[in-house]
Image 1 (cartoon, helix red, strand yellow):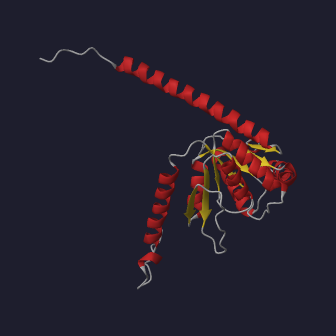
Image 2 (cartoon, helix red, strand yellow; image 1 turned 30 degrees about the horizontal axis):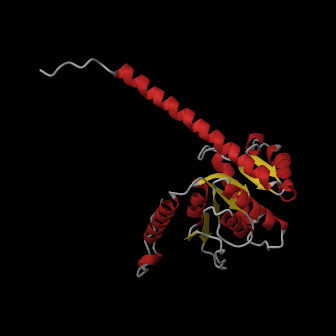
Image 3 (spheres, one colour; image 1 turned 135 degrees about the vertical axis):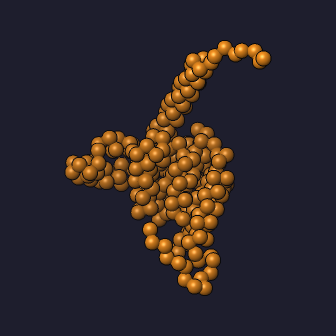
Length: 249
């Protein structure tokens, strides 16, 4: 890679070195703030949805039901459907977290947050939204929501994160996208049908909660089995590798 020197007289805060330090700082802050969270569900959706929209009420209900089930609710921290999810968490007295992003057009953090962290870099924010979630809930949204949906699917498909539920809420909104993926992308060999099997579509907040609870319980059982298998392997290797000890001369 060709190295290009910084312009003479450039402020240190405008250099790539400074950007690396700022990136590190954002990662450290995010990890420190979120490390102690209880099991969480990340909810995505449009900021351009009013309180009179049926999807807003549905997002409140989803946040409330998941909060009552013991989950922290994480959103992008903004208005619209993000606000609704955090509002539902607040009604359930569950932790409500917003991970916002600096944008040229300022979106104020919604008033239903117990914890709010602002990021400059999208890729750091997306890392935090994924890392601490046991499930993704995707409400109707625009390009940002689509980006987060496909990011989650790609990470699961490639084995970079554990397979967890990716649930689309609103069949009327999402059906066209799913049909295009099946009939064009999969049919043309650009993706596999197994990738689409990672997605669940629902219109029911209760069904969504139950799907997530079932998945988390299954993951817990799988983790316990894996831990037992590792422990048994360690014991077996310990016995196999042990040798009688001779007294010191």
